Image (cartoon, rainbow over all chains, first blue to last red; front, side, top):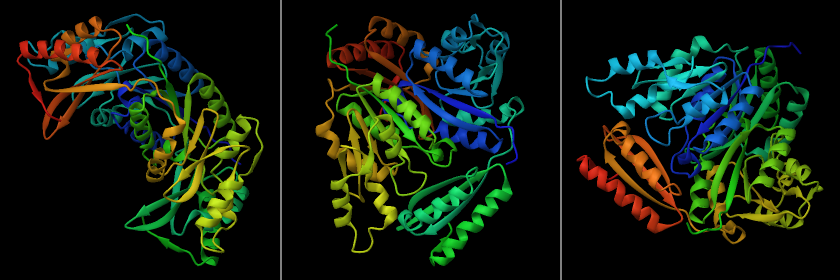
Length: 249
Length: 249
């Protein structure tokens, strides 16, 4: 097996609204897909409430164990937005006005609109680097390997472009999906054999129900295209033998 | 403050497909909403890969720290479904054929269709209790305070009804939402004051963009309806003073 540099990350979703079920998190899949595309593998995700001690403890654990940590949520203007002050404490840094962020928001709002509530959004950990926000002005920020992003999905998405130069990924994680008109139990044994013969490739099996019909998507993931191709051939071999139809999804 | 019995839970989402961003998790919000409605507060969610040691370690931590743990995913027939064997190891129980589950699936499938792949789904930790599956036959299971459910959202949903008698919740967590035609920064200070005067009530502020217009939903959560009502009055007072429109969402 060729050794590749593996780069991994954790996602920390901060917000009572996710834990109560009120809000459906979509930032995990947005971030994970994007990170995958630049060669960063997400190894764990945690959702925690808006509670300072929990945020600090969780962040300090995650940032030690992963190359990168991405937080979402809690950087707005209201009392329940406590990410910036919690991150300051986690890093033992002063929580203070970020001068560049102040200038950005002062210019962003009309005269008189940069009120006390909005000014809260320029308080950050000392020496934080800004993550620019092309949608709504208020920047995110990073310190060392921790990147703090907003919770609103459309704003978060618009900020990823500005992060590209700050994240150094490993080999991109490639994937191939084979969708079959079958059920998992029909292919389980054959697929197990393919997995056993290709232990360093990640093979997943996911049932789907699409346009009124059942099927299974097999997803092969690796940094190595030729290994993916090899698994693909082995899978297509048993699929052919079992006369299973390959379908588009 | 009246002391209420608090009942809490953690959710453990098991699956590489969530961490890769391929699949959008929706089970968290389904489970969390349902648990809230029966008086169980979800305190944390973790997403972990299909790796035995990580599943075992995470589960053993979560089940010690919470009244209930709900796992989703990894109980199907394929090689990447390793939840049942991991849970067996976490509890130091044998991983064996569950006789009742065997009878259920034997009766569920047509003669000859209960093949080796499907038979994998009746392997469970010794003395597991079944969670019946009205959608697709294969049951989930529980041991002590841990409830293992499938990853397919429609199947998971259909199994919650059968869980009701097994989960003992505390006081239901009540909530009230006030939606306003404003932006967060306009109300941040006033809302902070309301939160400070009602420290045992959870007040969240969530911006929204609906039908082309910006707004903010304020969510008040507590087990105590009169405390919610009191916060509501205090909020409506400043909303009125600021001449902010209350809207439906």
